Length: 167
Image 1 (cartoon, helix red, strand yellow):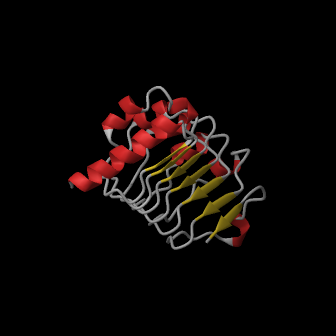
Image 2 (spheres, helix red, strand yellow):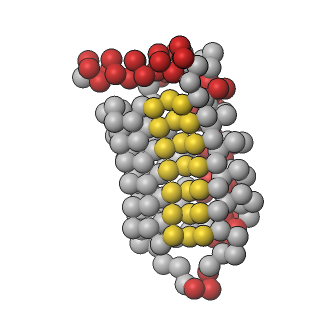
């Protein structure tokens, strides 16, 4: 456990000290986003454009996470145990790509449809059976929604014109 904590601390400090635009906390055995990160990175949160929390055991993210990292362009949350996203995700103004593959979503996280800049939504290998197609079609930047390995059924007349759905 102490080794895991030290590993997280090293990665956070390196991001802060080197002014990196990426925070990589993948494979750290995290069950939540560490509160201490907000304090350590408070002077440079607006410089962070990519966060990777892949392959942890994260059960939920807070509104504070999304209201702190307002300049995020890429968010990789694959390989966790997420079932939903907080409402604040809909306020992201720069998010281009979100990877939610290999989680526990049973419903499409509808707040994502409020993110006007999203180009890629990866929800591969979840348990999603329905899509808010009308809302997705209103997303101006959307290019791809990856729903492979989900129990979603789309009829051929439900194919959107402006983006691709991978099933």
